[in-house]
Length: 276
Image (tube, rainbow, N blue to C red; front, side, top):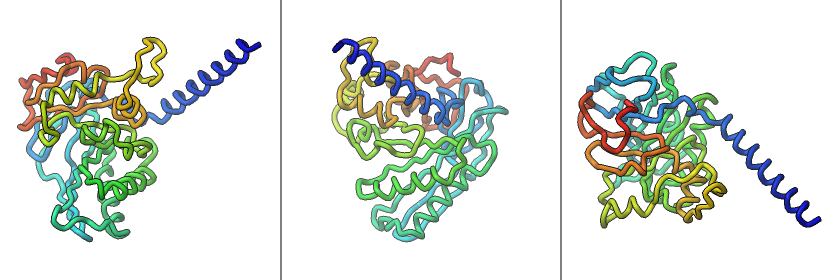
């Protein structure tokens, strides 16, 4: 009798997990986003040599400078050449003035949201990505902005955001954000101090899609649980000039930043070159 009851409880749990995964699959707005994305920053870029079936482009569309009550918008001015049918993600970079921090008044938030939404107005844009190194005092406002953007975006348009890698090791403000993907940036990490590789090693490799991981019975650390439930374990941002072991890029969508214009002969040693 007891065994039958326990089996019934387990069946209910697995059914609930299965339904949850089905719902998540239906809401995967980035299902057609390639597993390799090249960041194209504000400079002339000719990336017409990539294979659009395997590689997409996340290009800086505009930069928003926030200053107390104002929002200054700087539209991309540099040319960008990509092959036909390339998956295009528009990136909006947000920067706040350290000496005159934004007040995030209703009118300022409205302006920020409108500027972000306008970046994805072209039919060729499949998703938006917001790049904002928000201070702790700016996080509540940032969450509100993300909620507003998601509610106004067309349902099929994906919403991605970048994150400082340190945010993904237990900073709970990331949980339940209305985004389809969080991309921890594993480069230019000098501010964390100590050995960069030691810091990366402490995060461990990518975790399984199921945090319970019944098959391997592998115990997950709190930071791994956290990354799994706040969408920090699906993607990673790296740079061509800073090596990252492949164990951090396997089974993840990889965004790659280059400090200079992209060229065919560039080799990204952290990822499988066949992805190109």
